[in-house]
Length: 174
Image (cartoon, rainbow, N blue to C red; front, side, top):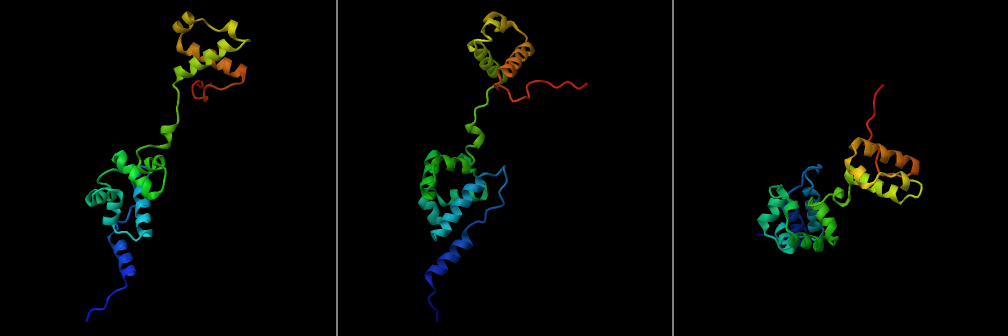
């Protein structure tokens, strides 16, 4: 005689048994952060992987390919990432970060050395103490890059401002 099992316990064991276990997260494998969140939420909701796939409106084989790392989460379409964001109740931007489609560095603008020198030149031209000593456009265009850098660094020090992070000036060993 077969006895009926407790449905909730059987269901929870099913989720644990069929849910692929994520590997330890490494910086190169950022997809795991998103997949780990998805597995945790599915387990909390007592959802099977097939139900999770349905909730995300993706195919079950695609979900498993994402879980195994065969398909990168960074390659997911915006529609899928928005669906994941809704499922996890997270902002879409955070899901992009978890998926590895964006990194925090993507939000930081780092100007080039030439752009920094242009900012410094503009500041010199707008500074009443330096405007008379600032090279004109023609002189600046034809000046050697190391001379431009020297002028900018001198201004930076005299004006007690900062355009450079200190790595631009070469250190000469004596």
